Length: 391
Image 1 (cartoon, helix red, strand yellow):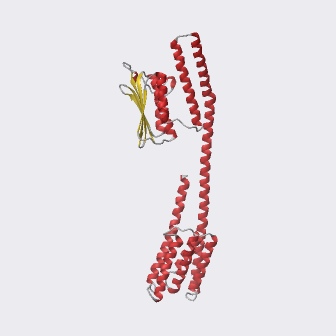
Image 2 (tube, rainbow, N blue to C red):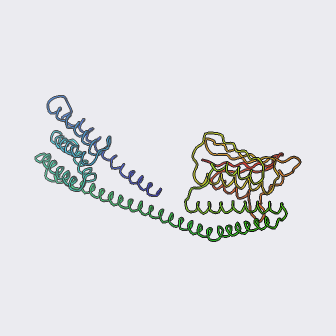
Image 3 (spheres, one colour):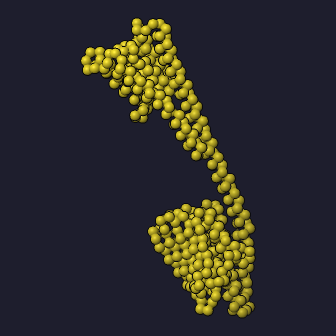
């Protein structure tokens, strides 16, 4: 849409020289009227000159909308006033420049008014100048004056046609940009729907099968009275599988424009972490809460989720804290784990997750895509991940 807006600005700029010419013509009429004979006065012919000059000023102001913006038909009385005042000035001051007022009127009328209105103003200007020059000028000069009226009307009419053509072109350009934008959104939506179907058919089905197998293994272990530690491991694997299935379904919902997870789900993440590891996980929210864009909300949730996953895999913490700070220009999330007594888990975090994944690297990329930043490193008592996103 920026291209269309620039074109509209250029079109508006093209009208300014026309208004400038009208103003200069008006000033020429007024200056010549002051210095031509008879001079403006408060009595006799001078009073008529003064009133005509005032009428020209008011007519130019309204007809060209220099000082006020009026609808075309609301300007019609000003065209009549401008032509009448100009004709009167031509009659009173044959040596003056009153004819310029008629030229301004017919040009502005042809440019601003609909075709019939502009033609009426042109005929009025032509008739008025005929009355004004009859008996005042020789035939050749009178013909030049009338030719000037016709020429200014023709310039106004051609300018009007050019303006209408530009308006139509701009409307078409705006419609074209809107259509392209809609097509791009449709393509993106179709791709997201395809990814959602693929994830549902492959990942979700695979995880569902895994959960069923683990459920069977758990029942078998209980029936065969196997090692309690093995049963606990199977229970944890089943819990993780169910969590992964829930996340896969949530990701599929996000691709289908369902409600995306956000900061409000951090307490649920913390509760799940406590239940899984038996380690306290405190959540603190501070600052005045404000709405975030959906992508920023999802980034905060995913970083918190990945940070807790890293704690599960790489640390043996005694406690974990999550702090969510709302700032005037963004949101800051801090996830920090505190080592158990004698543990060196604070140095155990790695940028890469087991199995070839990239935990911290992926979190940092998510932040940078939003114009934010992510810092991660040991603290001496554990490990801290701090995310800031604008919003």
